[in-house]
Length: 388
Image (cartoon, rainbow, N blue to C red; front, side, top):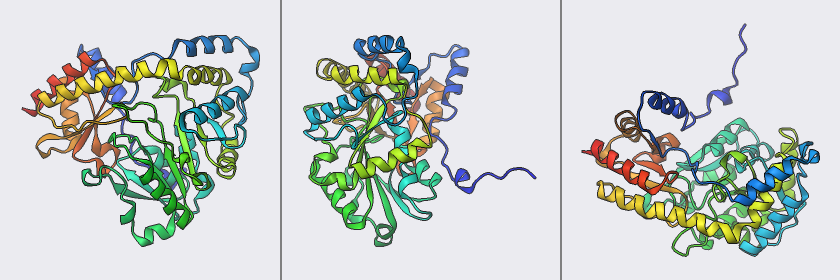
């Protein structure tokens, strides 16, 4: 008898970028000039100090040993100092912060600590697939809430049904948002904290894009709200802010009780991020004030030129205040997957169809600002031909 796959595994959604690297390689082998705007994986380099710190730390044999969940004390302390300077939030470096192998794994592991079979998690749709995957693998039930323009692409908390609230154990929020690039203020986040406190749910705030913001907008931390750490865990990543996607380093922040629960789960899953990478993370955080503004300016230039080119090509994208994405309505009512497939096959342009990120994303496609402005303009020009 053959081994049987677990039902939860069979319920996992397809990963939105599955097959794209292989298709891109095939097209390039045929001589096609591919412009990849699919993954949120910037072509820009990390801060030079980060590379130097990694090089130096990797030469120290002590950094090749098990990190365990404690990790590098200097990294924990640098995170605590940064959270205090950026958001005014006081955190204990050793009980209220947890180093992560990128924020994704922490987000996916957290449901294992809080969900009983059949418990509900409320998930923005479209949204990051780790929310849904972590829920399913923990035996929970995802409740997808469509993000629509009439709500400003926010989860309409006041419209959640009573039967959902009665079984909700985790609420996922992600602002600035991937993929819609929507943003919120502290008042909205406070309403979410109040709701989770009322029903006894954990509020997961995925804050991966906290530093890529434009036009004077400064995304707030949910932990700025008094008492929020009682119910909220905030996840941060070095991937987007410092162009360190492949380095896999981030952190979770919250109360000692919530962080302790995640740490205990992780102790059975991994032994922590490479200590030399954590040393490089210290250098990244210390370079924030001198280096990040220039990196954000590069993304802002790409945003502005990309928007102008898309509008000239006949598209109608809104202007985002944050993230490295443009959320673009698909023209003429064509299904997003079909439009993305034509863009790739006919013009060699990789875009992410909204429907691949959840049914609530249908009608849109996502462009990642991960190539130079000239290439974004070229991509918009190519896409205009398939619209025509």
